[in-house]
Structure formats: structure tokens, C-alpha cells
Image (cartoon, rainbow over all chains, first blue to last red; front, side, top):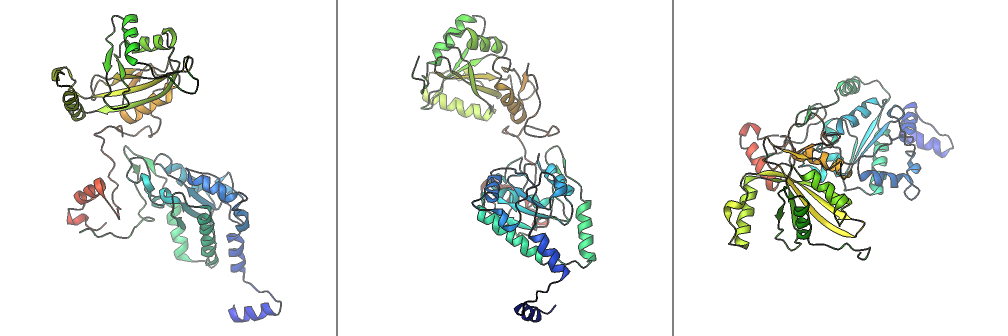
Length: 202
Length: 217
């Protein structure tokens, strides 16, 4: 619908929308996060959900104890290689459409433990991350900003069947949960998901 | 009995002498700590460690009833050579032949006495070497708080505690190979993305990317 006409009608007291916008409005403003925390970032996540920062203002305060009822995964903290398969399995158990926020330095890259033997170097090696929040740990405002960023991203979604999108979702759904090998996770990354910027070494 | 807010540090040599008296057949060694903390340690031999521990807790006049910490140390041959050098420099009369040369693994126990307000007392147990003979007696039957920490030492250093009720890995997964806190542990090679390498990581990156085929990540 033409934005100008929409705005003119609104001035006259007539509110118009599309089914697409209505869906996105509903999805964006009632995100149900999965209730789990991995490390200290989870403390900030808990603070965000409490009255001082009040995540309820953005409609994302209903933390669900079951992945079947959740559509947002906040990976809040260090993902150890021992824990990674469980996190990926939880993500796979969530119904679509689902979103992921990687919260904090550890979840996005391994953070201060990047050079260790036991920490996954970023959860985006195994699951598609929508919003990355840097920080160690990020302040509650940063998590709120991430939720707002995610809402803006959701607002761009379309209801139209899109073959490319569907194929990608199928490819991601078919990826296996990583297994524990003798030294590292197998596979160490999903190439479909994780392709970092090339770095030139001299 | 001392002020309850502060533990009295007692001379561990006194405890060692009492141990020697109680167990005349057990070789009780003495490890001096040259650093300013001067936390000297009693080195128990594995065969008598359990009996000594029981005596320290139940029958000794100090009643070491609280085990606050158990940790591991990996002494490689190189580390021992460095230590021997420092020992001889500090005291030239030390016989170099009397110092250990073959590396070993060590478990260190820190004891306190809540009853008497004493501590810490440091016990050390040493394995025969760091390759095939790496077992020590578990002190979990004496101090229950050793259970998880001995499992951690087993996981990260590879000391096998005999007599432990539940000897399995606690941090790494069961199929993990090797012991990550050993000095010679080789990490998994997942250095494929290092935008800002430095120090040891830079060195490894340079080795890895010396080959032009690996130049682009």
C-alpha cells in the first residue's frame, strides 16, 4: 500500500495495514525467549527482565522453560564445547520462525577464552545468529537494543512464499547436532552457516 | 586456641616430625618453599599417604579436619631442571644428585583445622613418573571434599586416584583424549579464524599460514 495514502488516511482517522505488517507486528512484539543462561551474561539478562530495565516493555518478558514454546534463543554466556551440542539441540527443538541473539563476547567469538581448549569460538558456527551483542558482559541496555534491532529485522519479514528462504531454512534444519570427538567437536563448524571474512596474512 | 577470625600458621616441620614418630617406616619428605610465602610442604609417599591422612585428621593433636583445596602440578623434566638450578643458587651446598630429575605429577592438598584454628598445612603427593605410573591413593575416604577436586585433577592432569568412589572425568566429555593442563598437551587445531593474533597465537598462525595454500582463510 502506498505510504503517502496510508499516512493521509491515518490523518482522517482511518488506520490501514496489511496482513504482512500485522504478522510482523505480532511476532516482533511478543518474542518468547527460551529460559536458560550459560554464564555471567545470564545475570545481565535476568537484570534486563526485572523491573529496573523491564523487558516487558518490548513484549519479550515471557521466558519459556521449554524450547517448544519459545521463538527466541538468547545465548547468554560462554558456550563450552561440552555444552554446545545441547545448545544446538535446544535450537533445533524450537518451532519456526525462530531467532537467535548471541549475547556477549563469549557467545559471539569465545571471548577471553578463545584460545582455550574447551570453549567454542562462537555459537554462530552451529546456529544462525540474527543479532550479535559485543560486551563482557553487555549492559542490559545493550540487550534491549538487540531486541529492538531484532524487532526491526522481523518487521522486514515477508509472508510471501520465497523459495530461496525455504531452501535455506531446510538446509539449516538438516544440519546435525555436533558430536564430541577426541579433541574437538565434530564437525568443528557448519560451513553452510559460518563463513567469516577472509583475512589476508602477509 | 587462637582468635577465631585468624588462623595460626604453624610450622609444618613440627607436623612432619610428629608424622615421622607416628609412622617410623614411612618416608616423610620435606619440601621447602623458597618464596616469601614460605608455605613449606610435607611430601608423603603414596604407600603410606592414606594412613598418614587418617592420622592427621583423627589422631594428631592438630586435628586437620578441613580440606580446603586440592590441586595438581605437572613437573616436567625441564621444570625440575630449572628448579634445581634455583635451589643450588640459593644454597650451593645442595647435592645436585639428591634433586629429582625425572618429571612427575603432583597433587597438592591444603588442610586447615577448624577445631584448633590452624592452617594451612600443605601436603604433596607425587607419582613415580608422568608417563605410565601415574596413580596415587585417593584421600576422599578421609576428606569427602576431595572427591570433585580429585576428579578434576584426573580430568586435567591424568593422575589416577585409587580408592576414589567415582573416578571419571568431570569437566571434559568422556571420550576426550589427553589431559589439557599437562604441559605437553596439544590443542585442537581450530585456528582458522584469527583476525588479530598475538603472542603464542601469532606464532602458531605464522606456522600454519607459512604455506601459501593456507594463506587465505
